[in-house]
Amino acid sequence: MYKNFAGKKADRLISEIVSKWAKNILDKIGVKVDVIGQKNIGERNYLFVSNHQGIFDPLVMLAYIDKSMGFIAKKELLKVPVIREGMKKIHCVFMDRENMRESVKAIARGIDNLKNEYSMVVFPEGTISKCHKMLDFKKGSFKLAIKSGVSIIPVAIDGSYRIFEGCKYKIFAPAGVKMVIDKPIDVKLLSAKQKRSLPLMVKSIIEKNLNSR
Image (cartoon, rainbow, N blue to C red; front, side, top):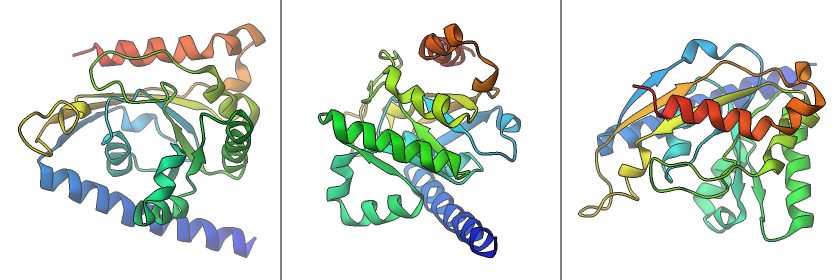
């Protein structure tokens, strides 16, 4: 029990440090984030499911979501020493999407993290869209919630692509970003049919929030 308590306390401290680091970077670039729905996040852990407009999405979430959380991330980030070590500290899971066996192992590690009361973030599009429009969701991402029993929180991020991907004249550009945090979806209450349609359900919620003013 003590080890578990000590571990959670250390995770919280690391999370606070990472959050301040992410917010400092966004502030220096001139990114202003409007957060809607922060009250929808409770004390428990969640699987945050978000659209993915640009490379700054993780920083926006780390800076403005008050929760210790790791990411399901592409394996290429393991090649960047500083980022790699930091991501390991917050319980990120690295996935090789070209290798089915390794992808299954990564999903299993993500499920274990969720069962051990860590929150996780997944971007089911699998890549950045570089624009307002969303790409199709990959169904495999939702096994994280279904097999762990952890509730899903849909997150809509809009405007983040303007910081880097949509910036033509600078390396980074100031931008206004909107992040909408929706209400949790308790997967334990869903029927088998509803679980099969979960990707479409969550995508429609995120699309609705992207298009809200």
